[in-house]
Image (cartoon, helix red, strand yellow):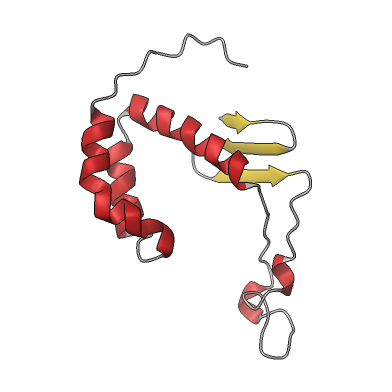
Length: 119
């Protein structure tokens, strides 16, 4: 399923989420994350790659995905997974503290069904 097309092509094949960006190189391979203490590519990062994508583009995707998840009844499961498996980073703090409030609020939303006109 394609979420966005054009310079920022975000899509899922049902198993993996893909981000292809026309001009997304952000020098990730020069960061300490990818290099060993001698400034060479770390052995565990030989096949690594990265992509930079503007926050506003990701924000738009997040809203599209949230609507889809509400429609498919996947919100609670996603919140639990995000807090459990991916928790502990700065971005998860607000979610963890408000997980139940978000679940309750989002459960109240009843969306109109997609009429199939999107391309």
